[in-house]
Each structure stands twice: as C-alpha cells, then as structure tokens.
Image 1 (cartoon, rainbow, N blue to C red):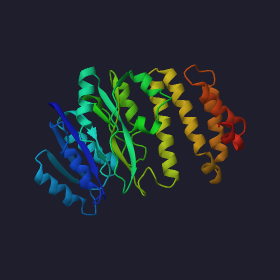
Image 2 (image 1 turned 30 degrees about the horizontal axis):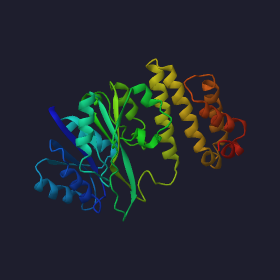
Image 3 (image 1 turned 180 degrees about the vertical axis):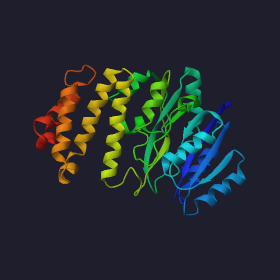
Amino acid sequence: MVKNLISIIVPVYKVEKELGECIESLMHQTYKNIEIILVDDGSPDKSPEICEHYANIDSRIRVIHKENGGLSDARNYGITEANGEFLGFVDSDDFVAEIMYEKLFEAAQSTSSDISECDCVRFADGEKPNSIIKEGQKIIKPKEWITETNLNGFLNCVAWNKLYRRELFEGVRYPVGRNNEDEATTYKLVYKANKIVRIESSLYFYRQRSGSITNSKITAKIINDKYTALKEKTLYFDQNGEKSIADFCRARLAISMISFYDWQKNNGNGKKWYLEIRSLFKKTFFSKAVPYKYKVYIGGFVLCPVLYKYISK
C-alpha cells in the first residue's frame, strides 16, 4: 500500500464511444498521486485497444484484460490489483470533474474520515454537464448514514461518488453475477468506517444511458437481486446486534417490495409478496427506529393495496 496514493478502478465493457472522455477526466485530475486501473472485462468492441492507447500515454494507467465476469467481478479484480491507500470507482460511461479526487482526499484527510463522498450531476447523451461547486461539508456517523431518510437512496448506496480507505475492503467484495451490487456492499464499508464526510459539491457526472442496468426493463432477476440485497442487509445488522438499524432496513425492504408489487401481482406472485410485506409491517410497527412516514406508507398499502398509491401521496 502506497501512502496517499489513490487507486481509481474503472470496469470497462462495451463503452468505446464514452471511454475516452472517462479516462481523460481521470488523467487531468488536479490531485496527481493516482493510479488508474482499467479493467477490461472481456469487452468485444474497441474498448481494449482504447485502454492500451491511453496506457501508452500516461504511465499512471494500468490495463487488466480478463474474461467477462460482470461489473462486480471487474471491480474485485481492481481492488486486488490496487496499490493505493485510498480506493475510488468510476463507471466507464461516466466522467468526473478535474477537482473531484482532490476535494474528496482533502475532506477525508482534514476530518480523519474513512469515507468521503460528493453529489453527482445526471446528464443525457449530447448534454454538456457542469460541476456544481458549493461550500461546506458534513460529518456523518456510520449508523446515522445507514438510517438516513432525507437523501436519495440511490446516491447513498452507489460506489462511484466516494473515496474509501483501503482497509475497509478487507473481507468485503462485490457480489459477482448480481445487479444492485452497490446496495449489497456499501453499507458494510460504511459500518466499518469511523465516520463519513459528505461535501456539498456535485463533482461526478452520471450518464443516463439507455440500455444500462439502471435503465433496464424490470425483470425477475432485477427484482430478486434488489430483494436479496435488502434482505441480506437486514440480516447483517441483526447478526451484529443492531436491532434498530435492522428494523429500519426491514421497513426499507417493505417499501422496495411495494414498488414491485404490481409486477409481482401481474406475474402471479402478488399474494405471497403481500403477505411478506404485511409481516414486515407487523415487525416494525412499534419500532422507534422506523420513521412515522414509513409506517404510514407501508400501513396504507397493507390496509388497501389497490389504493396505496393514492394513500401515500
């Protein structure tokens, strides 16, 4: 492990049009003590050649070629190969502001935090997004971070808007072959951290690309992977004696299940799905850890699934 070195891990698969913009945004970082690990996950297009091209330009770039194993497998390869004291992740169809890692590193060092994170700017192909610079930062304790209710849940759990101290990944890897790999992993890293610092600026540019996992049509696998991740999360905190956090996670699981209820009903699994949501509601109704608005939403669904959308407004 090299002190103060940031290892930026970029899984690469079928992104020949966007890859150059991603790599160049990392090459131009104002924080120079970085290594860029491009993990070619058996990409069938010109992405491997593009990776090699940039590696010949910048000695800080390393390319790993491997058989296709999916996003989690590529990230795990990168973690194993990384030399840095800190780890960061960037999706290869996205890019970042030139100051992103400087700001994340400064925030982590100045507050002695194990994780630093920033906001993101969502954009569509053809748009030219700009970073949003704001003053201020917030220190968050791990248990508070895990049970936040006022932050976009998607942004909270993703891997790519954060900088992590390397030791957090000891014994932790992304689950191979599953969607929602961030949902299944980030909370473990946060729980191990001493504290998290959040800077207010939006420095990561998140591309809204048709055909991506995030924008894919709902399938049984997508639903099952999301369900499994949240179920595992609840069990994790039960096993660690964190009943309040586990109750909160049970409520979030119920809310997620409600969002997929119509799909389950249309595919013949509505009754089973409903009964589990009702069971989760009974287990969390008296818990002080579950926000009142969650109880109202889940309770409204349990009372009348047909009208829950109107009840929740």
